[in-house]
Image 1 (cartoon, rainbow, N blue to C red):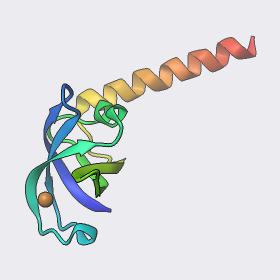
Image 2 (cartoon, rainbow, N blue to C red; image 1 turned 90 degrees about the vertical axis):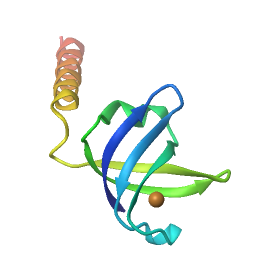
Image 3 (cartoon, protein in one colour; image 1 turned 60 degrees about the vertical axis):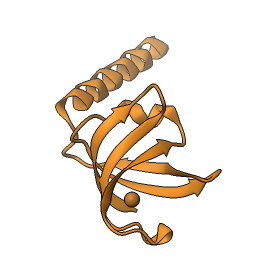
Image 4 (cartoon, rainbow, N blue to C red; image 1 turned 135 degrees about the horizontal axis):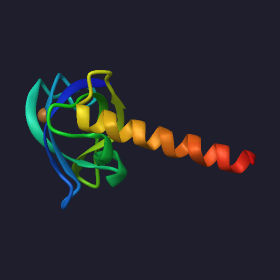
Length: 98
Ligand SMILES: [Cu+2]
């Protein structure tokens, strides 16, 4: 996995601009560039300034983010979304146990 910081999220085209460290599997030095994401759900966790670790590969000729691991210093907005998601899951679990 490589380290990166999200510069921009483009939900319309399923793209994300990442300031990334070296990508050894692609023989690429550190730089800022645009990637496609393999699954648009990946974009939900990302916002400007998010720190992540990720895997990128060439898929159908396009440089594509295939795996993402969020760092703890994620943006406040996505932390709040994550909390709301956890609360929903907890409510759902409580409902099923009734
Ligand atoms: Cu690059």
